[in-house]
Length: 142
Image (cartoon, rainbow, N blue to C red):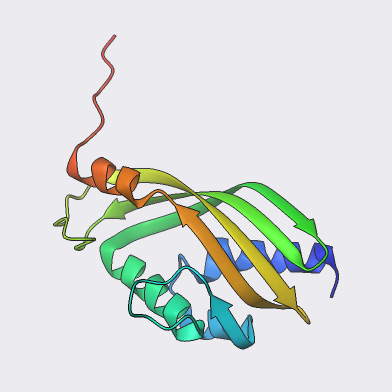
């Protein structure tokens, strides 16, 4: 598989499989021995950790949508800059459901092996997300 196919797969994973909570589709796109470097303390870093995060987000947020702002591929690596939007309908990091819609940006770096995601790194600003859920943004008047 080439960089173009890897980039297309990365985009499909992050815009369709994960926000749709499609466990089987996501599992089929992960390489044997997949390593997720973005895990909660006490979690293992395999495919189950990524699937658990996907399920956890699905329980907390409805109407998830991911827009790819930038996608760059080189060799076996793909970098995605995405914006997640959703509605807060379940508990998330101790914040009770607010029903609020929010947007948050994330960066993902993925390493591919034979057309499947072999490693995943993510940077997301969860503190900004918690602030957006707990304190609505001021409404501009005028």
